[in-house]
Amino acid sequence: MKKNLFIFLAIIGMTSLFTACEKDGELVTMSSNPVAPALTTVPDLTLQRSNGTQVLQFAGTRVDPGFQASATYFLEACAAGTNFADPVTVWSGIFPESMKITVSDLNGILLKKFPADAATNLDFRLRAVLVVDAGTGAPGSGANPFSYASPATSATATLYGLPRLDLIGSGMDQKIESALGDGKYTGLVKFNLANPYTLSDPDAGITYGATGGTLTVDGAAIAPPASGWYRLNVDVNALTYETSAYEIGLVGSATPNGWDSPDTKMDYNPAAGTWSITIDLVAGDIKFRLNDGWAWNLGYNKNNTGNLNDLFHDGDNIAVTAGNYTITLTITQPNGPTEAGSCTIVKNN
Image (cartoon, rainbow, N blue to C red; front, side, top):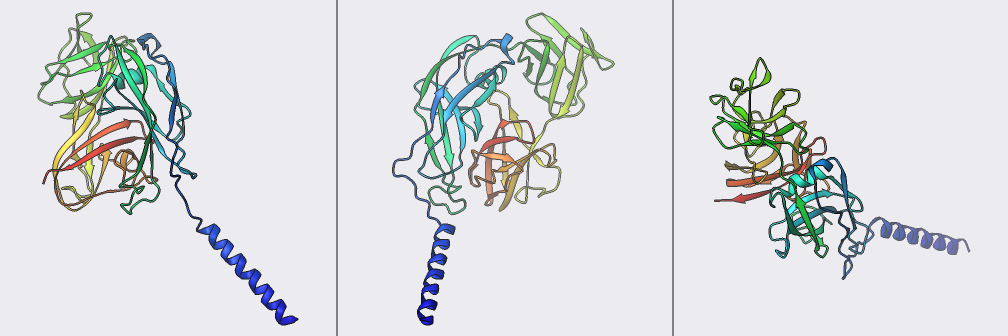
């Protein structure tokens, strides 16, 4: 009787062990017919400068691959009928149920590809990028993620042109803009220490210089603080201006200076809104950072490693082999500590 009791208890113990192992190593099975996300709400896109601070809300549903999964979502727009051959990313994040963006931010994003003061037919879609197992190179891994997109939703967008100040004498055609038309202008500009500049309002026919750090009409040319890319903020109502360095650079063991400063600086394309560089790299790692510091830096999203379309604050290093590369960075969220972006890395030889 005692022997039978021991056998019975042993069977119970083994059954419990197998059950626990099954729970710990539960198989994840993808549906043979996963449900793509859907874009359910597109707001009125008749954009007006006077409503620049108004918050617009797009809404969508989540992807359903047949198991519980996290995904990064991208709200994209393209010219109607072009099948998203050259889309612009309007929003990215992890909560597609409520995708919020201000009128002025949306207007600025769409102006990079579509004309101002005109009605343009656009297609929108919600795309989900899903990584199941990073690092293996297999389908669903970080280097080869699953991507599911909603059907296109058509809408007509009317964008407004932005009031601007032209930099005269800076050595190249460049401007800063006022998103709200309220006399406050901002933009990224490239200074040359040898080229003092003035600010011209082409609509009002007014030129601003500076005297003693204060803007004055028809004042003396403004001396740049140094050569390089800067953010220039101007308030013509208060007659003030300020500059702050804004240099995106490459850092890492693959770059000429390794992990030390100064970083290898990239160049900005205002029309495209991208940073780019062509550079010789050795085998190693790279990341992007602002002004040679770690407070603002981009690498692989730690939850989506391997996907260059999903770069995130303080992310993982990006590995490269030796060669000559053209690297282009698009910053989709400029504000830290949640800065985000995407990049392309093209090996030339």
